[in-house]
Amino acid sequence: MTDETMGALADQSSYEIDPLTGAVMNPSPYAQGKFERITGKIGAGLRDWFQTPGRAYQEGLSPEEETAWGGGTGFGMLGVGAPLAMTGPARVGIAGGRLGSVADQAAKFPQYAERYPEVGPPVMQIDKASGKEYLAKQNTPQADAFAKERARIIADMRENGYEPYFDPAKRFHVDPKNYPPNVDTTSILPAKQATVDKYMASVGSDEARARLQAAYQRGTEMPNTKDWYALGQVEKEFVKELGPKAGRKAFQDHIATSMSATTGGANPETNLLMAQYGNYLRANDLPYPKAAYEMPFPIGGRYATGNMAQHQKFFDQGGFSALGEANPKRHNFAQNFTGNRGAATMDEQMVSGMTPGKTVPPDNTYGLYERVLGEEARKAGVQPQNFQDVAWSGFKNLKDPKYASGEPFIQTINESIERTHRLTGMPKDEIVRRGLIGGKIPMYAIPGAMGLGALADQSRYDR
Image (cartoon, rainbow, N blue to C red; front, side, top):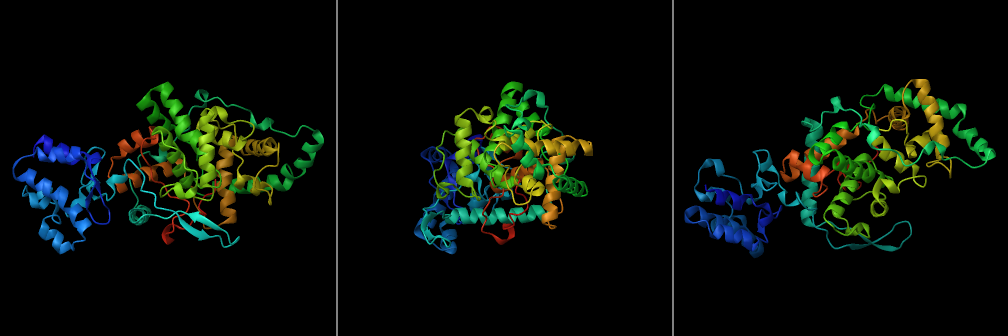
């Protein structure tokens, strides 16, 4: 087969394959022109293959009629030998601008390697609590097929495992000297000593300290709870790709700050999903959605609309530099990803664990919670961040015994890379380069609202 033939096949941008039918949809004139220039039996076969499935889909032909028309046999009709024989157009497995490997050829959704699934028209629903009507998101048939395939992949990964892109056993922390903080969050305190004393009666009580130590001890007995924030391997890839200055800036933007912007009410998978979506919007100069029903599958979650608004707000104001005293949790969350182990992220899990009945620190008390945790961390002989990530898992397990093992965030990233690769066929190194680092393409983590029984457990994390 000539280089021109291979180039025409490998040009993923030239056409789109419908996942439900295998039909080639909306072929570009560019692709048709390429096929027209290929002469002989192969060229005729390619043109037939390219046009027939789409016509069969549009005409509503049966599989038998489609096969008789020439479209159901895929490359087998070209007569070019067994190595190119496939089961049909949907199995071409073209990925990342070139023909993929044998594993890549099994990917069913190469068309979603560089863009998210189409957004369907919203549907009117009634809120059960208020009785008011509202517009809800509705998936297209293509998005539903995508969701089912992703569910199958997730189940297979959990049952059979996979080879991680980054080795979690070798994780290490980012060097914090390259990412100075904006504020010392331990200084966020009430102005009056009397108010400090009032809150310290609960925040700094023997009971609150005992809860922290019990959660930390429980966390140390569970696997994979230590060094949750350790992303030195990931930062190294950014620097390798973009150089020290631009690479660290991109790491702070695309990982640390994006994750902190979309952390509200989200587990790590949902958080990463929304963070990457925000990066994708900005990298491709696309508008932010104004409503949840405008967001493509699989973007979602309890507070998706608010989190995406925060993403836009912080980056419109300069990214990490916009985080400070007004948002200490988000500031410290970003700092922890960039290696600051002296700061602690006091989120809902930590606050409610220390002071049951509260989910966020009262105004100007964030520093009190963080100081008490820091004191207990010193008793345990570890830095505040390393106390917080272990105690977080301990609190989770004490509330929900089914949560029996932590998962470092680098593993969440690994799963997203692997899942995106299996869905789209794009090589994993290209997903890292163009998605994780560049933000130009989607990365598919687990969403906040799957609608699939096997994926319905959203209690795994609420970090």
